[in-house]
Image (cartoon, rainbow, N blue to C red):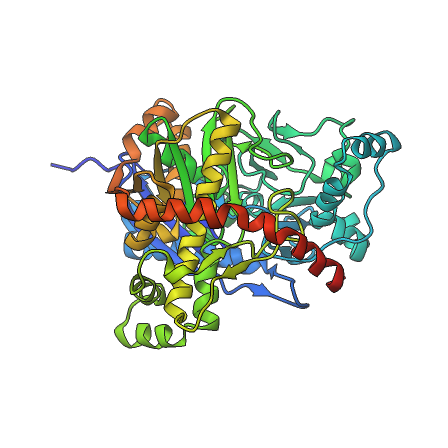
Length: 518
């Protein structure tokens, strides 16, 4: 008697460090997984971070082919494929989908200096509202404005300017389309309406981009197209399998996390770290910090982000962690595991060290001239104290984010669902629970962004009736970490007395540094 074949979906997650391909069944179980490291970054000048998107596509194809090599029978079980990716990475493409220049990564620090002029009425209104500096900061951050200043001819030739998710969807389907919930970038996108801005909107004047250079947007759970014959040859995904719209990585993570109930705050612990809540109304947690589109159509993700999140673990290992790297190589484990052991060797509070992780500044809070800080050094401190302070500093930033979100949304966050690479660490989960003072849960899979994309693909393929049914079936809690009362009380005193006032005390010095450094 033949065993019925399990229906499956493929999720492709293009992160900052790797491309991951994961096959899930209708119950959210991982049937196969593969990843290819992304060694695709170049830095032609200090602060630049460019990506060879052809190498990204090759890594995507390689990750998929590795699955079929080990599990060829899964190709016949596929009902749909969906893409999720890092946010804010843009690439200019010609009419055939070929890159005209390397993509500018979201980690890139270049800034435009010659800005497109705004209409006089808008300049007057922004000046009256005292937000002119903020608007100019957003214009300087826009990658297309840098291209317009330094590579104007190339930008003029570009048929489309797309996010990395759009590029991958185009390569898979042959259609120049992207998911609505993937649009997180300095683009003329109306986050409240979840569509490109109307022609009269000031944002078309603020960035050097034409409406014709923007892709078609497709709501999540709907088909963008189908896998083309060329993409099938390169990736091994069967020709004709539907390509379903999903969303950006953090939106997909939030979709998976919110399956665990109301009052959930989704802590995304990747290269950047953020805390987000999904809402049915548009709420900006901070002015000029949009509520991004949720994968669930018509809903929003309000979030607070620290751009240099658990990237700081990698920074520590690169700059100070040579003993951990050597020990990890000898034992055949990840260097991050040795970092955890180092940080765990120090008691809560890091011996009085307090780190504020503003290595990458913000718009309003922290301001554009903010810097990272570590205070409290004494002769008793060593590398282990700094390692512990990095983890605690990220947790303090997320507690601050929780407080901002609760005030803005008027909703109480009762439980943390921690996703992303650092969610594998028991130490990280316990520190988050203790600092924020809430139970912290990890999902049943560490691949939360892939799971969220798989939910979208499963709904689009008709494997589940709707998104609620799909998340209920596919996302489950893993281990629960409860806050320790004594440790949480210590962190509460540190947060209120040290972390919370720290930025305000240092902000004038950051402004002075910015003026001195030009």
